[in-house]
Length: 113
Image (tube, rainbow, N blue to C red):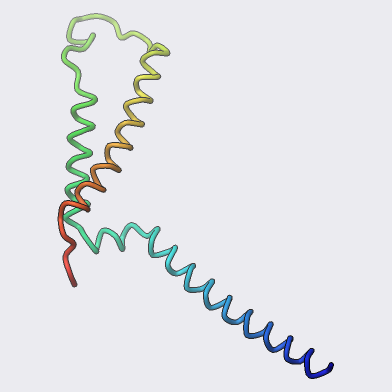
């Protein structure tokens, strides 16, 4: 019975050690996955293209034909509809940017180091 307890304790110690190592490895992977610098260094062309696309999209979405200031009218306070539209534009922009990044990533081969 004493030998069995020692075997169980050593098995538990080995399991704890392997779980600790796996947890450290997982933490390293999560940190590298969340580090934007790592991703930028891996494919700077992708990020530059995404920034260009996002800038063009923002410019197209926020461009106005004529403003009330150009017409000599006083600015009107934002309505609930305007606020909802601004939120929808923001949501569409973030979704579009994400989709554009995925498209560019899939369209261009990664540069090998």
